[in-house]
Image (cartoon, rainbow, N blue to C red; front, side, top):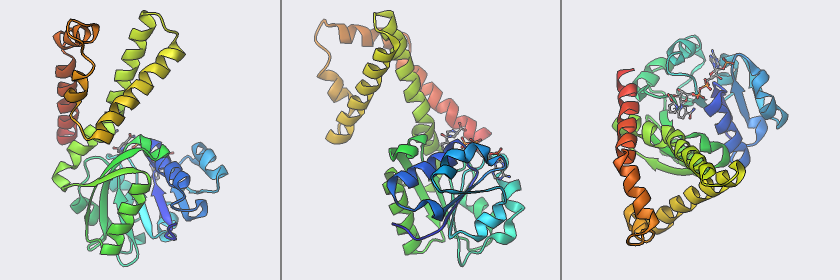
Length: 266
Ligand SMILES: NC(=O)C1=CN([C@@H]2O[C@H](COP(=O)(O)OP(=O)(O)OC[C@H]3O[C@@H](n4cnc5c(N)ncnc54)[C@H](OP(=O)(O)O)[C@@H]3O)[C@@H](O)[C@H]2O)C=CC1
Ligand SMILES: O=C(O)[C@@H]1CCC=N1
């Protein structure tokens, strides 16, 4: 268990999910986590588990060793600039999960020499099933190891070059929404062919989980596993080919590039 005090600035969807995951993993204890937002009423669930809540970001930063910033990209600069004097590069490490804000920009906000980390998890971090991509700057080996330990507790972690961070945002973080939309469409199809919604939901979600597990456990390419399902002249290949005629793969690839360009162009 870590003894470092962790401040999460911006306790929204992702900030709260990180707090939940950290608690669930036992990596830090509830009183060592402080989470901020302006309206802390929405943090009642975390508060009930012993997590500290705060509206004053400067107070939270001063009490912490590690600061995780989960603010929106459009207000991070303004919000952190207001508490610039609370940052101490000799004491703090700043971890940002904010989309599209570079480590140089983070260092500029928090002060020269600040150890900074960009991490791109997804909302499955709440249940320790995140895919998290990270890169860092000015960190000591001890700090870098601590960050890996933290995110390893919360799912799978990979270190990447910062130039891939926007791509990681799309594939890993937006990817949760794409996968859920696939499952939703499967449920709708399942209802049309006879299942009630609850049964269709369970079958669709567990089937996607199984498909992902086949790739992860066997380190395989999807088409190898698809070949095992497609009987010649069978129903799978007939359905797959119709999906491709309707633009299935193409629409996913186009969606991914549109998401990516949205980050690049703002
Ligand atoms: N959601 C996701 O799946 C992912 C999000 N990200 C990134 O994480 C960041 C957060 O996203 P998300 O959690 O979805 O956004 P949310 O809007 O849910 O969370 C942002 C939070 O910041 C709080 N906030 C606003 N102003 C302040 C302030 N002055 N001080 C403290 N807190 C403040 C808001 O609460 P209040 O209004 O009460 O202050 C809000 O809850 C974004 O940069 C996003 O790009 C990255 C990967 C995945
Ligand atoms: O949609 C967004 O902007 C954020 C970034 C990744 C997931 N949600």
